[in-house]
Amino acid sequence: MTAATTGPLRPPAPAGPDTPPATPPRRRRYRLLVPLGLAVLLIVATLVFQAVDRPDPEDPGFLSPVATDADADGGSRLAAALREQGVSVRRETDVRRALAAAGPDPTTLFVPAPGLVHPRTVAALAALPAGSRLVLVEPPRRVLAGLDLPVAPAGSRWATRVTAPGADGRPCPLAEARRAGRAAGDRERYAVRAGERADRCYAGGLVRVPGGTDVVVIGASDPFRNDRIDEWGNRALATGLLGVRPRVVWLDLPGPDPAPTVTSAEPDPTYVRGDGRGRDNRSTDDRADAPPWQNPLWDAFPAWFWALLVQLALAGLLAVLWRARRLGPPVPEPLPVTVRSAETVLGRARLYRRAGARGPAAETLRAAALAQMLPRLHLPTDAPPAEVAERVAGQTGLDTAQVARLLHGDEPTTDQELLELARGLDALTRTVVHPTEGDPR
Image (cartoon, rainbow, N blue to C red; front, top):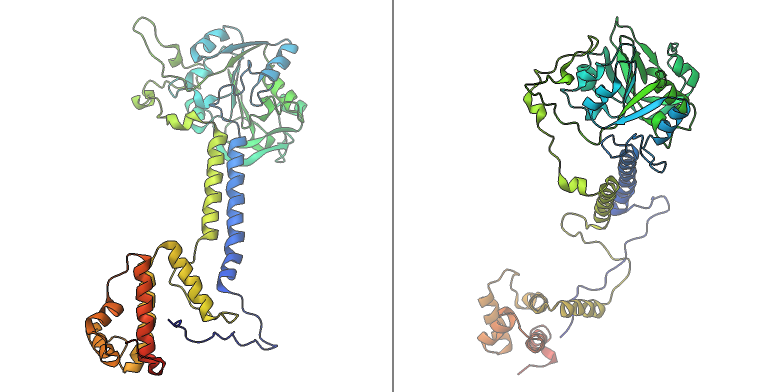
């Protein structure tokens, strides 16, 4: 059987000396997609690493006075520094016991994770003896509103910045901050309501609201953490804010604080107003008592595992986009070299054999035979199969049914049937196209 070819392919005409070389469309697309993909990957990886590196107040051991020195987010070094200065540190894991431990004397109540305090218990944090101090680390808006403070969040930075107490051009009236000097106190920033009295330092990262109980709001946990306390003036700032009273009650909540309960025999102390700045939250919606829904699968793995999973998924998506085939139908392009028809036939035959595609191979052989015979028989390409079989049978002298089986029969089921079909089509084509080469009869 002869190979069905259209002749050797000619290479494209060479470009002139003034004609710039054309860039293939696929290469131009890669030049756009690859840098864009790398930029997106870099941004996402930075966001993930930043989220993982930022301490989570809900993690066990966050700013805990009993955490080990190896715990970067713990507060054991700060507790040891306070004890060295003669300040008593008492750890409590419940809001009620912490308020009871404050006693009648002026005390400092340190709340490193105020977001874990129940909304109906927030107002009780200010129920301290006159002359006490309440220190809140990165309190959310609802905590500030629950304490009726004239302070509200005013934005946050990407990462904590080390600044001077008067970084925004305003003098810092807080003596503890002036003694500490430059410290990592500028991350979450807070604004003071117009007309209210408050001390503002570190570009709004530290605010003190004076009153019967001083309330200190600081927007960064870095000065209190084990891994950052020895940098710049962090130690002096942390010990200065907490060491103004001889006693520190450290509220180390292990998780979200449950809703307070009230018995008929004894009123709930968390409803006490304090020095007038707290509010009675007994009218809070009862839906606040319901614990927040948590996905057990999310808590089963650490945060770095999910971050790694996200990065692997993004890398896999980029690899798929990079290796994916272009959309749309194939576009024929001229080959840069001449390919012999025998090599093309042999290569396609090996692919069909490897895939076991006897049906597509038979269709290819029949299409090639018809492409050569139809012009000789003066028939159009869309001629009916019956007319083609009859015309070929008249030309070759073969039986019409036998010709119809060769040109439009069933698909071969074995390699032997495919081989016999190829031999029959080859003989038929030679008789019709090259009648001088012999009659298959």
